[in-house]
Length: 235
Image (tube, rainbow, N blue to C red; front, side, top):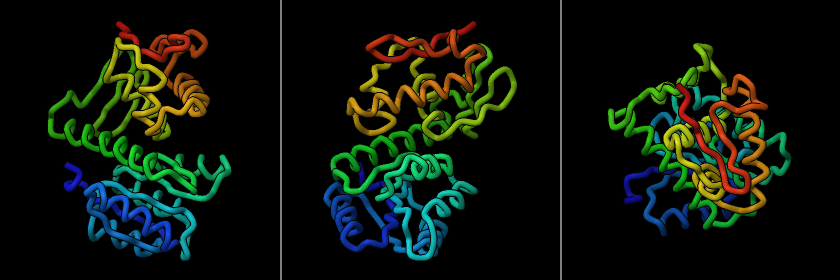
């Protein structure tokens, strides 16, 4: 049930904040509000949520600073909700540790879909921490320590962005299965729009550069043209 999830909405625009919180109310999510960087950090420390919906343009600072500070002690999901359209702004927020980025104006249905994706990821992480799943994935020279979100290849740590890490974990948990483009897009981005496939290809290419010994001849991530991708079992 959604009631168990607590969502912090950080937004200084009253109309947008009201739209988001009303939508959350209608779908039985508990929520608290903050209108500035200072209020957000206070809420995060005093009433830890399960997920943060965060605007970047706040009156006393930048939402990216909230993400960086939060990542100092927590990996809870962060969905950025911003009017900033430039790729550089998106990259900065994602590199800082945001899990998703939605541009205003937005569809409430898409926002809810992305909230569900983020919370499913949170549930999987909590289940792993409780011992419901092997906390370490090993495949050839590739290792994923889910508890610490650490990835290694041949004993060397690999630094991944949040999107790259989510893609890798999704493929790893389905080793041997072909995951379609639509499935990957829904699980990671919360939508299956054809326009998002270019983003999927870009993130998959950067992921391969980091984990494959020879990205031109992939050992781990196999492409099924027109269908999707599959994590191969490597001995």
